[in-house]
Image 1 (tube, rainbow, N blue to C red):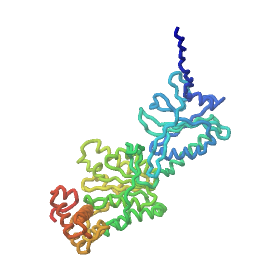
Image 2: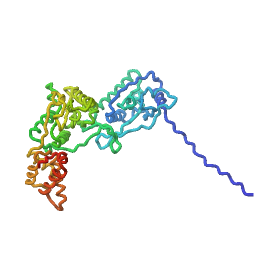
Image 3: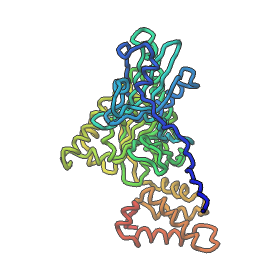
Length: 462
């Protein structure tokens, strides 16, 4: 008879303990011990969502080293879009209770080498000098929409508990008022993420540096600019001591390409310690947010380019929305205190279309500065500026200056670039020739038609 085959027993599987999330209400009750929820006091502060980078820096500083920290976690709660607060966390829920989870962070670009990692939702259980308290950071929601950052502190409803909450909030307020993450930088408000996935609720711009000698303007224009911007800022404190207003409104106007934006780049570097806020016409809906930042980050400069797109004469407006945006701008400018260290710089290519309530009423725009087409001296300087790095003779510079009457600075910049390109097409050419200049001029003035000339800021008559 064949031997009985031994039955093979399947290998025993190791029993693994099922991981179980900690229920937040249990953590809180255990942390506070004999102190019942009815004996706690919950204090709350809400901060603008856009200052979360500074709030995170403050949190890191307050809880540095973890000497007071007993437990830290993220929180997952069903329907979190309705808001997460201590009231919902402390009540025991039979189904789908809030549970402790690993903390989730979002990287915020602040225009420096490294972004700041900002916590989305966090719960800290802390003890200081025998007093136990808890801190909750969560999004502040309104009708399912994110409107800010909320901090809640749960502490004993007595003197020591009140001291703990008061001290914590004062540290947060100091951090926000310092606003070191964005102070003195060039900012705009964004609603999207950058290409690398970082959040850019506040975008920090790195404009190219423009030196004083690169601002090519008539002497009269430069004098107005220096007196009403540079010297005004330098004497702002003295003006305030005489009871004079320290806010100011300026209007830069002139044809396209005459240096308005270029000058703003110069001012961004020249006004040390000033925060510059760049507002495009389509972002004027965020004007209230911009103004809140401007007040927080004083001294500040608010730049609205092409202001005629939102502040055109009321008779030329297309509907009530346009008028509402204009009224919002006027109200914000009027609402500034005289002592505010805030400067408005508005730019336009079409000053004749501006609403009189903005352009003609004293107190909103204190000085209009014209940016005209460059004169002969200015064109000479522009040719030398934009031909740096290339060889060009003085005779040829005079030739360019004579041929470019009634053109913009932008036209001369493009002319010199194309001239260098024509030079490079000639093998072993060591300098720009007259032929290079003439070829570039013909291409810009004639080959592209009248529209091309208009786009470049040229004159078809040449």
